[in-house]
Amino acid sequence: AGCFDLSLTGNNETTQDGLFWDYLFCSDMLQPASRNGKSDMFWEQPWNLTSQAEGCLEHWNVQPRPMWATINYGGRRALEAASNLLFSNGELDPWKGGGVTEDVSDTVRALVIPGVGHHVDLFFANDADTDEVRVARRQEVATIKGWLS
Image (tube, rainbow, N blue to C red; front, side, top):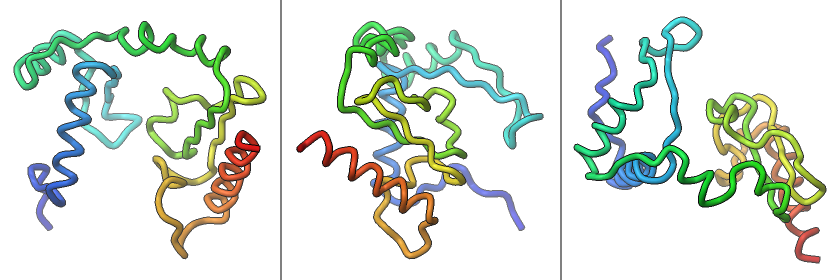
């Protein structure tokens, strides 16, 4: 079997979504990440802000602002003053490490869904959904209904 061709795309919507995310990553939501090739399935690639900034400038003509989201939204401290937020994370989601995984208050809640990946609870219901996903969706609906009552 040949190697997977990384230049292929699924459809135009997938391509557009990737471009939108790439721009946001460069302009507003810079998220440093590295790979070591030993504890993950990827090749080694240390984080390099200079290289990332050069790529963002070349591709989008923007300079990354690493602290923009924290400055604009207040970072995790702002969650202490917030209300009616529910953060869901799959236990296997690689983004979980940067997510809110513990309740901040009675009205800023976190839900970690066992055994699933990225935003599975936000997909349409499917017969193949695990019991954990079904429970999470019920918790999400109950939480939101509680805010509205």
